[in-house]
Image (cartoon, rainbow, N blue to C red; front, side, top):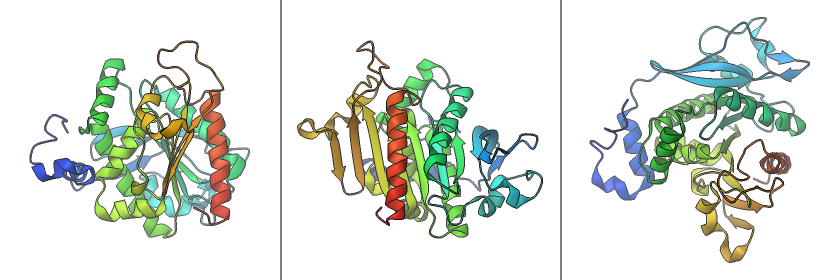
Length: 317
């Protein structure tokens, strides 16, 4: 798969419509695909009743991707972790009566694999406070290739140019949506993104086929922290982006939502919050208060997850 040839064969009429454009690009790289997630059988899946986030391997045909997975439902599969594709057992790993069935997450630039796993553990720390039973958690690692390559990829997201990361994420999203709808027609899916992960989320949603896109608009909730691109509400059931006022990395990309200096933008399915920094940056230069595991975004994550749980219980999404 090469990014340079992504434009070839894309009809010019699509260029003025983001969803049609990205969908057309993704179709060029949508073969008879095989989406697989495999879990190392030697790793413990729970400890003291708490799900353990473990590294996993994702495969899109012959392309290998790093993932992570955590579930409190492994005992439904018997004594051993299943070999082969964990997604073949997703119906047994989803909590049928939970507030959420699936939580996925994706990191931003300049994150190592340990950073990515740490992000997942921070999310689980908050989920267990408000969600019982725990949803299935799957992370999709946005691999860093060095600051120059990562920044170049981010610029392409802003310029609406295809990247392999977006195309792969879209194909995984489609697979998740199809399997969830088959196993749990009224499923609720939460995706959490940070920084560049927010841009990948937006472009991936724009690339989905109409059937899967319709499922996202009915079932997907997104929480993004310091996202490079604010995900439009018309792509999801509900979309929320949160920015620290001390975020010197991505805050400028959301200034259009700060109408009349207000700290909250709320329009139908989209909400954007601007929150005070709990870790005031020491410099006006990036990154400032941009880290996902900093106090500001962790505090906002906990508040947002608590509010979301209350809204689901009150049938107020």
